[in-house]
Length: 252
Length: 252
Image 1 (tube, helix red, strand yellow):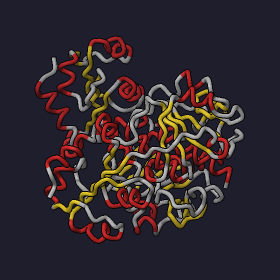
Image 2: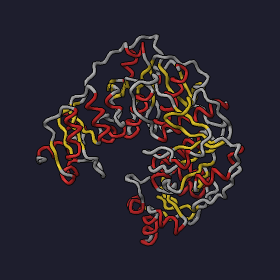
Image 3: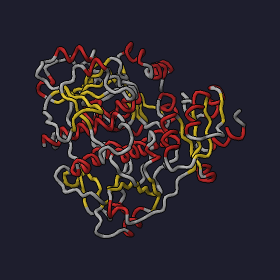
Image 4: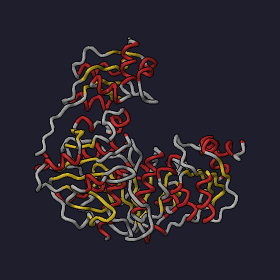
């Protein structure tokens, strides 16, 4: 039986303010909930239909709220609920400024669209990028739309919210900081490293002036054929995919 | 003054059935409308606020319906209307099966999400891919969400709806047909041509069996590090971006 209070709590978690207050977030669907249960993320509560009883037993979850489809619909954020809703504790990974010295990381300067952020987390996971540094103006990774768009990758990638320009100044000066610009150098020809940070910018404005000042390597994804009239830009998640693919290609 | 009939017509164009019946589609916002007015796409009607009067004059449009913000809101599909709405005639480009012999094309096998299709059209435009062959089960490119997501690229890329397997059998046997699969060959190492067709599959099911049979080159985007537990797949528009980038990199 799903209590009114629990429904109220879940609904409140659609808003960042209440997610912060309760330190919780919502994930829906078998794949996503499984990925989170397998990870170090702490599970607060599972609400699921009878069909997931076996799976929950496997994960040793004894206090799940078993509901029927109609009750689940009342709690779900999705137009087509997927039978299982998990409430999880937000992760708190300590910020270690030496990480980009040893591995490739991403930084997001005010990415606004929840779907874009989710897709970027999924791309990072695919390409073995374990840390994403988000500006404080970037959309909250625990936004339900973002969580769903990560398709489970949120369980494996660490997201840190920081004052980006300040963070860049704190890390070792020798660490390359890449950014993509319309007037950057051809990424296919530029030397790319196995460590450092790649900054991706806001959907409309790109990388802000304060972050741009900290960029050491200016890159550009060339369109084809060169100089042809085409779309003026690529979507930020599209550009992230191309850039990450090119970095990883060099290392394989 | 915006007539009730015109509002009714615009609203009806949210549905594919009525878009087909009227052979029209809706595009909103300055960038998108400008891109379409500059192209060969035929304009049926423009509804805009006073601030666009100068722009409309430049394009020689004399019969635009000038409205105030409130009236525009009644017609718009967007939560935040962008001041200008265009009604355009759907394109009808004849299908030429010799095109993939000379240039690189895309084929989409039942892509379902309007946003994904729009993003893919934008990617095609960026990389100079002028023809996309969509299976009849692919979402309609004139869906308002798709049109908006193309960011104007719809004006420059030709979209054909066809029975894909049959179309593949009609084109010259020497034309390479690429597809991405989990068990394909590493795309970074595989020979890629400057012509042919790249098939991208449905969001959940990938490339269907009937299209798979026609694939001559099986590719795979490797994750990193190899064999590591990560996201099981990439979003179809993300994968399209990576594949197109890799094809074009070889040609630059």
